[in-house]
Image 1 (cartoon, rainbow, N blue to C red):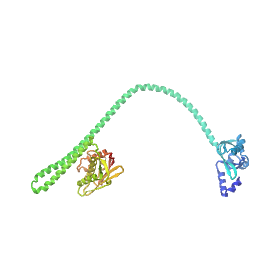
Image 2: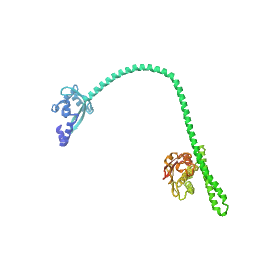
Image 3: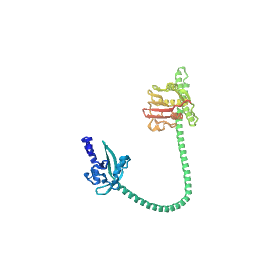
Image 4: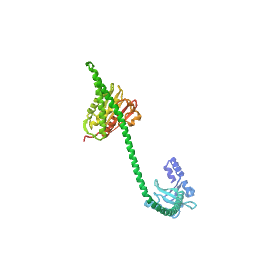
Length: 436
């Protein structure tokens, strides 16, 4: 067979194959159809305790214990005739016999190989001696553990019986204490409930007192200033009797109108807040073209701009029909735009951007004004709250609270970004609804 391999392989390939076989950790033995050993690698020779020359050319039976040594030739013959594997092509655990007659466990995998027209069988042999010793140790350990477990189970059973007696005694005692414990729990629960209710009432009282204080402070300022303006202007109008004093009279009449408008705005805020708080406000939705509505609101508001202020409007959705309550949507625009112009110095820009994106109406109002102090931002939507940097600017502190309530009633939400001294941006998102 060696000669046959050499004729079919290059010299380099043959050397490589021999090197691989000779250095393999597992034993490799090849036999012919009669069971005669043709090759045995060093690992196999060492495993069985033979020199290579003592095995090559002899029956492989010499490596097997009885009765397999006598039946081996029959195994090969039966396989060749029937092609039904017993060991060949399957592999299994068997015993091997060393030169000194000792037996050892091994894993044998036999495969059929054709070299041209010649058939040989290759056996891969893996020594299981260490594995079996480990298994034996594990078996002994398991047996020892089983014995210990039986002993422990017996002790546990004895102690369990004693514990049952103790538990029964404790149960009797517990039954006597259960009633007292239940009574204490009921009393504690009632006490906690009363304490919680008192805390809630106290918090509500504090909130109401704070709101009253804010309302009184705001109302005294917002009503007193316009009323003082009206009173002084009326007195001056009465003093201007001559025809050439008509321009002065008109100037003070304009002041009176402006003060009345301011009072009307304050009263409208109070009325809106009252209706919202009492739950009387329900959406009355209608279908309308959004662009004309929005342009009317923006054009109407331009009259309130300070000198030099510019309102830039940008929007998409030409011809877009929407389904909203105009009485909800209009105050959102007016309050946000009013704040933008109120807190932005003359000569600055105010940006109003409206976009339809997917199923949302997105409104952005951005100013270049005084901004909101960081410490005040968390209270911005609170009723009657005004940031500390706008105390000298008229306002009720209700506008943003009302805006948020209207936005929420339309199923939307509002957020803002602001930096003191650089301006504020409000972002409103309202879901679009179908008319039906």
